[in-house]
Amino acid sequence: MSTRFDVQIGINPISWSNDDLPSLGGETPLEVALNEGRQIGYQGFELGNKFPREAKALRDVLSAHGLELVSGWYSGRLARRSVAEEIEAVAPHLELLAANRARVMVYGEVADSIQGIDAPLYKRPRFFAPAQWDAYAERLTALARHTLAHGVRLAYHHHMGAYVETVADVDALMARVGDEVGLLFDSGHMTFAGGNAVEVLRSHVGRVCHVHCKDVRPEVIRLARNRGWSFLESVINGAFTVPGDGSIDFATIVEILGEADYAGWLVVEAEQDPAVAPSFEYADKGFRHLRGLVDSAASAAKEAR
Image (cartoon, rainbow, N blue to C red):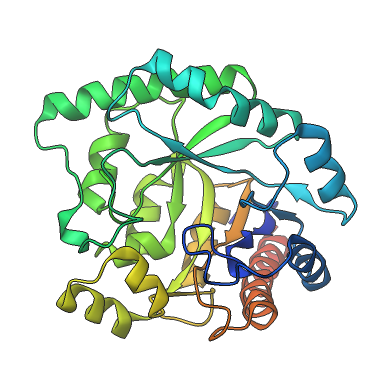
């Protein structure tokens, strides 16, 4: 374990209001999320659809609560369009992140994705031929080189219902992209996809530049697979929850990150229905679980010196 475990703990506003399913907490004002997040102890927020998209306005909203901008999701379409087209499309988002000193950009591939539609997860898109993987990785590396030139590293989000979902997909992509491309490790998505989160993190920790901390309810995931649920149907039924409320071994995840000298954000991002899983209660539970693990890891490292 490193003698200095330099991580920050942030949260995604999805705990209060869901961007993909506005019926889940859509009535909750942004101010409520920011006030409660800061009260709990979070140091920053990822973007959600209720945040302003002008640099100074965003900075003012966050600084009023003593919060930092962690990052923000970008819906990429490199599976279907050129690097030049993507660079043009990403420009406003990249500028917003850079102006607010975010160090990473969450890249989610949405071309052909079924994550937001009523379709069973097995109907997700796939790259079948090595040439398809090679071409996609080349375009992705070029885009990542562009974002890095603006001080923001591309953090690739493996995601249910998309081209890169499983362990094999992550392995195939990471073997092909350049070092400019970072990996966003999402414990919940990887477990839902059938992977062992601890083993996958251990394999790819050198590329990890951002971490989404989701826990899972295994019994719901089994139902989702057996009944052919869509991604959103799985979310509504409680597939995900906050760290410490499910089955994932976050203690080992934190240990692996510490040994690798990870110096970035741990982000609680657990899509749930706030009517079933009250926002403050669950955001607080996730924070306390992670904070305790990080503090314990730091103390152990100090004693080992």
